[in-house]
Length: 149
Image (tube, rainbow, N blue to C red; front, side, top):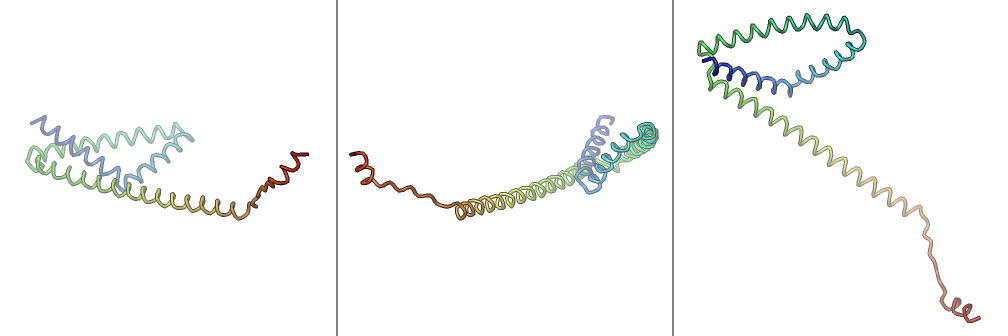
C-alpha cells in the first residue's frame, strides 16, 4: 500500500503544481518572489529570519496535509480513479491555457509583422516620392562627333 499511496500523492502534487503555476494566483506568487528578492537585497538578515519562520510554518502545514491525504487514501476516500480523473482535468486545463497563450502570441506576431510591412512599404513609397529621379542622357551623336575630332 505504501508504493501506491506514494504514487497517488506524487501525481496529485504534480498536477496541483502545474495547475497552480498557470493560474492567476501562480502569477501573483511569481511577482511576490520577485519582491522577495528585492527585499533580500535590501535587508538580508531580517529576510532570513522571516524565511526561517515561513519554512517552519510551511513544513508543519505540509506534514498535516500529507497525513490527511494518507488517511484519505487508507480510508478509500481517494482512489486511483479519482486521482487519474483529477490529473486528466488539470492536464486538459494546462494544455488549453497553453494553446490559448500560444494563439495570443501568434496573433501578436502577425499584427507586428503587418505593421512592419506597412512601415517598410510607406518608407519605400516616401523615398520614391522625395528622391528626385536623376536621368542620365547620353547623346551618342555628340560623343561620336567629339571622338572624330
